Amino acid sequence: MIEMKNVSKKYINGVQALTNINLKIEKGDFAFLVGPSGAGKSTFIKLMLKEEEPSEGMIYLDNKDITKLSRRKTPFLRRNIGVIFQDFRLLPNKTVFENVAFAMEIIESSSKEIRRQVPMVLGMVGLSERANQYPHQLSGGEKQRVSIARAIVNNPSILIADEPTGNLDPETAWEIMKVLRQINRRGTTILMVTHAKDIVDVMQQRVIALEKGRIIRDEQRGAYGYED
Amino acid sequence: MKIRTVKYILKQGVLGLWRNRGMSVASISSVSASLIVLGLIITLVLNINNVATLTQTHFDTIQVYVQDNLSEKETVNIGKAIEGIDGVQLVEYESKEQALLNMRERWGEQGYLLESLEENPLPNSYIIHLENIELADDVVLSIKSVEGIDEVKYYKEIIQNMLRIAGFIRTVGLILIFILTLVAMFIISNTVKLALNARRQEINIMKYVGATNWFIRWPFIMEGIVLGLIGAITALLIVHFGYQYTFDIITARFTAIFSAYLIPIEEMMKKTILMFTVLGTGVGALGSIISLRKHLNV
Ligand SMILES: Nc1ncnc2c1ncn2[C@@H]1O[C@H](COP(=O)(O)OP(=O)(O)O)[C@@H](O)[C@H]1O
Ligand SMILES: [Mg+2]
Image (tube, rainbow over all chains, first blue to last red; front, side, top):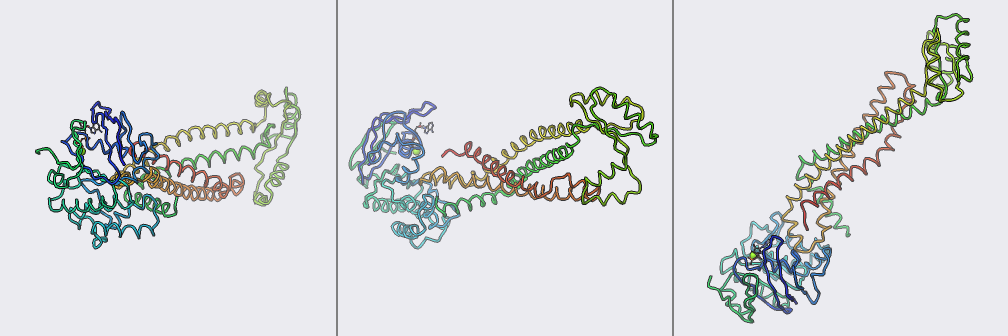
């Protein structure tokens, strides 16, 4: 569960990126975050990951105020939040298996756990056959599925996706959406930043619209609502 | 920390070092350069101190060499003249034959070396004990004005000079080492910066997946430590063989007696191994920590 109370963010250069944000995303929800460029979407994500601190307000994750969390505990917060990006961010000199295993290695999982968990999530994203290939041998959609596998391999309760289909053709984008939907059905809360109007309109999920740092619309089963 | 993590840290550290071989060589050289200078200074200072201490038995006496061509009467008169000087407590006469005997005794096992001498090179001398060590300078001055004297050996002055030189070497050396250490740290921190840049992408992913700061930092600190350690080992080898070589030359060219005044190599190594290792790894670790503070904001 994610909750923001009166959250504002002003960067040190004076830019007011978010103003008085109040919202609550329940456990297991699927929510889209939409809005024009510069609206504050990335800032919203950075606050959740504690890459930035809010200037005002409180942010609760599973009822714990993360703004009070010390910097030393930040890594443990991030283990509970998976993130995927538009540009996949895979390590080119590691195989698909190794890229996913990397996320487990750095939190010191045992090799036994790694051998059990990695094939399981690769199966979930439909990449079992590709385990020993390198990123350059994969299509864009496959790369994004590897990055999803890496994001969920440590069983986070929340998955954040920052324009995950931005670099993909429509058909591939839908494959990715299917994978995300399936992960959501298993109970993972998903927050997805997107500009893909057709996806938002078809999915019929909650839509939170930001503009100039304020929430201008928050609808269950909403539509994209912009013409661009 | 799990064993697998330790292995990971070691492997990443060495890998990073290998990726930037050129900079690694520069780092290692700079660490060993400053440690070699340190070794040189330690060698000089310790040996000078050693010689000074060993000579200290003559500390409070003045030895007066009498000219070789004097008659017995003239020699005795010199003794009387010295006795008359203010501050002189006791005057002992040591004939050149006695001096040779004494030397043979002092040299102990190596005394046989003196048997090959065709002629006794030692002078007749007076050994003067002082009432008060503070009067030494005045007494030396008065003795020098006595006719028929070849040389006045006043060991206290020599020892003090040696100690002064040792002190000077130590001060200049420490300043030099300080500068060289800064240079070494600077080079290491640059090497680590390159390693950091090579792994930017990886570090970024590690951050998002929830690696702790120390997990991210350790491989780089390890890289610095390994660089410093290799530098220390290189310096130890060079200092060891350098000292051995010089020791052998001095012993061969001059006389074996000299080696009695030098600190044996085993002892030098005992003194330097721990110091070099700690300093090398310390400089390495510090250099990389500086780099991490500047270039890695996790
Ligand atoms: N680190 C930063 N420092 C200063 N201003 C920033 C920073 N990051 C973003 N901004 C500004 O904050 C506003 C919101 O940016 P952002 O959250 O990236 O929007 P979006 O992701 O919706 O495009 C923009 O005006 C942007 O220029
Ligand atoms: Mg953005």
